[in-house]
Image (cartoon, rainbow, N blue to C red; front, side, top):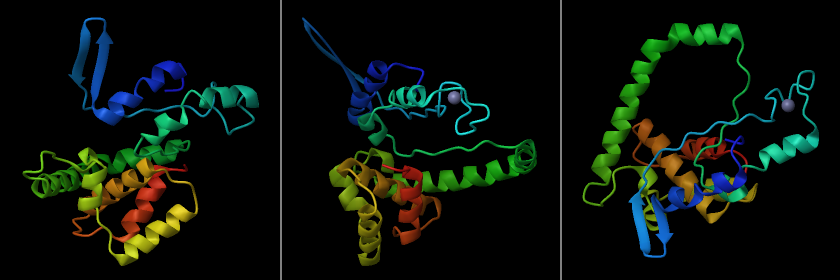
Length: 199
Ligand SMILES: [Zn+2]
């Protein structure tokens, strides 16, 4: 993603937020539906080797400029922000060996979680947790007293925007759904917070 210009990347903000693309011309405004799942990846620096300082040839300034392509408001609209570390050959081979059977099990969990959501939102005009607006999030991702305490604690340690807060709740709801849990538990919140990455 950081290979694109900041201006281009920031154009994603509106469709990510409103799930439609608006194009205004002299003779009127056109609206196109744009419900999509955005999966993006980026290197930590232009050469891709940072933080391995033996191989990274970028200056601190170049690294900073590269990362600045991803603006704060754009990153705030990404549900999950995950750091992926370098994988060794042995790890990759172990993963490939466990591959097909593991994928099958994951598929079953995902299908069950999707069904759970379809049932929960029947008649509500949406299908999945990701489609909940702020009001819907408050309603369907309600926390018990322990969950609220946990959320206050987690948010107290970093600055979380209102948008970020709701996103964490929706991710936690999805983690609970994947586990077949009726209520959002504190471990779901903590995992959601971790997947959300640093603010
Ligand atoms: Zn580099």
